[in-house]
Length: 567
Image (cartoon, rainbow, N blue to C red):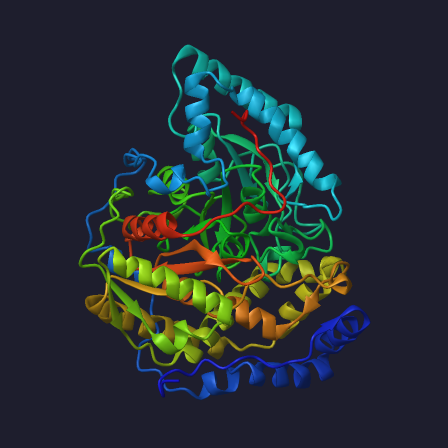
């Protein structure tokens, strides 16, 4: 490996059940907690992080927001950009998913109505949760309310006045965002204070576009894990192999799309929580530029690294949802400093001249099956005219620790007021992570912000040499869910690090990143390719993703429902 590549793998014993409970008790105790946290934090690089000399000022605001002030500003509530027509990848015989375009085509032709699809969604949701093991993609669904939305959409289609490319299309919403009439549990048993009176901004925009909101998607408790195993609402299962994890924390959103319950779901991503489950479940996931999509109505868990975005059955579906969800929102101050939302032609798959930045030691730091699928995808992009440009990104270990310090410190601060009365109601893995986060220092958080600024500046330079940066989305495919983790979770730092090896960089610096399915490992488990770009380059990422999608193999998950009438 290159001398500048310094990402090391975490080594720590796996704990679950009685061992995990003991570990949590020690971590939460005043005396033993200090010693235990010191060992854990040292093992994951915090000591070296504290000693690092970072040549960057402590920023007064997020680097993305400062950089955006010099750009042309988008108008508040400006119309969404024109949505590209379905690309060739959506018509392939081996592509298993029913896309948004397939639903609207069926409605237009009179082969189905949104009301018929709604009944199919309700039946499929019930069937998936009665299976062994239950899928648990959705944790709440109000069937009558789904029917009411679908009836209104059916009337619009029959009158010839559909609202657009999502009218009547089923969409699920991660239970980290408010949806009118549903409690927002954030994966817990105590955070919801009754049904939300209003939709989050992105949910309101999807509802206004005619989407049929089919319910709240399951998630890893408070988003502080990457498996999707939730001891309160049940583990979200991977439709490609229900014995395996979905990834997290937008676990139910990914499972719902992969299982065919909807072609689009809303997720949230603080450290890979859209892209990781998208990769492990074989669907598309987009984390846009920081501030591009409003956070209003999302639980304020990790405000400086948080992003809301779509998971989807296809790149075009992700583009449709992104175009509707993105843009300024008066309720989110961070969303105002952005240029107009644009999309490129997803059907233009000639990539001549496009420069693909690859830091080879990082790219190859993954399981053999992941590397093979991602290498094959890169070769196909080269065949379409793109050119690989070798790049280097030194001090990735420093960046990883800076992200970890930032996200866990913010989550601890967000949840601290609940500890007195509800600490015991949290899963054991959540409690352990929060106990360790509570041992971090204010100086650690300040150091992390200096690292954020330094890496943002580095990426400004890096994107002078390349147009996108490619990595695998995860370092491994979906892990098996251990039965001992189902009731209280588990602590497995080695697997967590493998899963999160590539994703958090986009959250810390705020740059957009897209995960696209690019193949399978030897066990038939999905592999995702991650495409990162400069700020506001979502259209470019989606176009490259469409090219990956067009050449990627595809097969149906083992758990998959068809909602439209079959020919």
